[in-house]
Length: 504
Ligand code: MLC
Image (tube, rainbow, N blue to C red; front, side, top):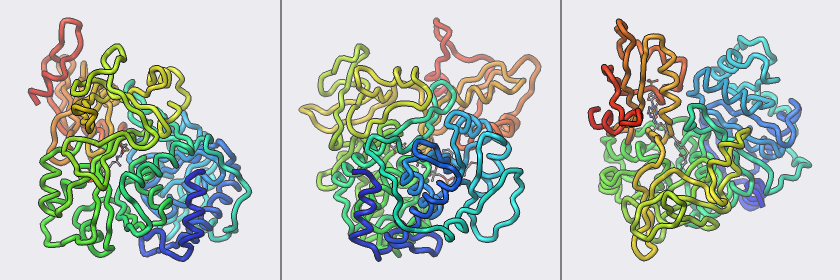
């Protein structure tokens, strides 16, 4: 069984029910099924075959959903890319994943053209309103127009559980994003496990304000809705006041988000009440108790916490029918085993802190084109999460207490300092740089940088910020800059980021 089989089942049961609302359009489950069949045919006409990668370089839209499902229906691999990525990040991903086709919106199109003029055969433009003549040398095809002219009947392609389905690039420890590969089995098994943990049924109504280009929005939110046959209001972006209004008007029963979203929702100054909302699910970053408290006080709902990673999908969750303990992420979901180990990979006793390792149905194969990174990610078949965890006494809930690796999670987005350090180090006036995370009231954590300038250089933080604009996605740019005379180092010559963090 795959997500596609379950989508098919939802279509058979709820053919005429609205599946998804976006931008004044309200396709039914039958429309989604037919539309994604047509999308598969359009992609196939461009030569996309089983195993090929199809890049989806765009923000949320109905077209994104159709192109994604169409890709899966061909047995091809969907490659969602954050549209915030700048030239270097995009060039790396396109060069590494070598997609046969890129589906992009207008902005994305120009960027693909600039960074990969020859790497990609064709580009399908997601039209929004008027289509102007594109400024590209390569043939550009209007996706929705092509879709309307194409047959909606089922395709003669069989997709197996072990087929690769999804390739998502995550910020890399070594400075370059790495592609985490997930199979159809990973996707469906995790969707079913989460549906059980959340008590999700066809009667639920989800306001979906997460980006579809990450696994939270795609695999947790969208897959769950397609599999259960529940209705979704898809948002193009997160705007707290607007989302609150939509939650009320749509009579949403479910909402999912990253901690920043819960924090911003709790701060909206309106009297809106949400009597239909039964469950709010928070993940992708640690939820601070204070944020949970503010949200619970405002809306009378304690967010349910779950834990995951792109590479493993969601491996821990609290349950909808059990009390929620703040600062905890519940238990391993169905199909997942977990252990907490010391530096020799020996399990520690309950109550002790160690690295969390997981294995089971949703843990992906590893990294695309990178056997060394894949080998390093696993030990004896266990995936090393790099997160430090503690299981409460007597096999109770697990709490995440820190990270074994340097990683900043800003508003639910992963940023590895090495990647930002490399970008800053390219500036000719920079002698040394260290990037680290600092607490942030909105994003939970944000990126900070300490820079040592070359002799005689007089660089301002504004100039450094401007230097980074076209080099890295803006969410990775430091929000706090310090120009320092020297970086604090230990006896081994390693930069003491905890010292920098304390100063910042
Ligand atoms: C936006 N900005 C951020 C940021 N998001 N800066 C730091 N951290 C972030 N997370 C910056 C932009 O770069 C921009 O800067 C400015 O804020 C305005 O951009 P925006 O797009 O209008 O921001 P906003 O809508 O406010 O976005 C905030 C957000 C968004 C929280 C809604 O970041 C978001 O959707 N986060 C969710 C990410 C997610 O889905 N993660 C799941 C990964 S999967 P400038 O300089 O250009 O003005 C995973 C596995 C799991 O982790 O377990 O789920």
